[in-house]
Image (cartoon, rainbow, N blue to C red; front, side):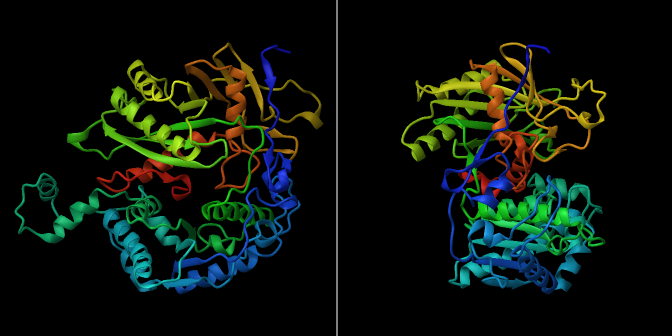
Length: 503
């Protein structure tokens, strides 16, 4: 065997009473969540009448056991049995949306107007409730029909409006009179909003300072059916959906379902986020920057950075200038100290592209506020350029490479298989031949085995999906989605916000 081939033991997760297991579902079933919760959830539902009935059905079903014979998608004992919270079938607030209002907006031919109008319809219901009612809500469920999901996405069909392209451009440039068509001006404003219902709703909810997290669900999902409602989920998929929805809701309520058992104290991980702005001749090559910081507890925070010309000429990589790099990391370090009383001992910056000298100099400038913090830059990429196969003629052992295998190339570079065969579940978390992550310690110094072990640990912190292990560490898993939300509405520079508001 190649002496550089190494198997990293599956990270253990910690639950109630200090008990540990490698599978989040086992730990939650046997011991309960890491952070104890009790009482009754106060849920607000915004939906059609049919959506409300579907929500009632969903809660009634999720509070009961859902049996499964699958090791990969195991038995679900019931929400209250697992998490200790009571999830009432009837929500604390039911805000009904008239189906005819949705149908009218869904039939709007222009995608931008369609999405903006539908998001406003749901969001206005929440803001009106907050302004007029006293009963607090812990979490909002936005229940949408299939047609909203289908027709409010970036590639959904659209048609040009009655306005000419010249009129739109003139309005954008401020060349039209203040007395010009107000409808045109309102449409031009909509053009700057994202076409994705989910991303725009999340962004506008943050902008409106709605304090309770939002869970968006399809009406068909609440009936445990496929998206278009044409077929029921198998019992195994029903159990999987129950686990995933439950852990996401529990996390959004402010509790940790589990945490890593072996993570080193005083260490935090920052994942860089970049999102290209919408095409604009005045801001060609401009992108929004952000950082996701995850603590040793497993909880995360998102910080928005500066907008600038961060895109490389080949439009494949992004790099900050020195000032913006320092500003972004300063925010993260300041936040860490405010919550812990001191700066972290080690801070790992995870990115998808190699750090250039100016960018890294800016990160080091930020580090100067804490001379005791060790700063390490790690580049993580999915690759299909390199694969590892087993040479086995035994049919009983003819499974693919195991999750946790690593090939160390040298002191700074290695390949890590976060996807692959999992002995505990006797299945794989990947449908095809598993591709590894290519991991490079690009800046600073740290043992490559330690870096690879940490990254494997970070694949087990996806609270939005209660699964055995993810293929991407949480520092980068949601980077594209967070970038989409941060740029979904124009000219917003909101303060740091907990990770739970973005998923």
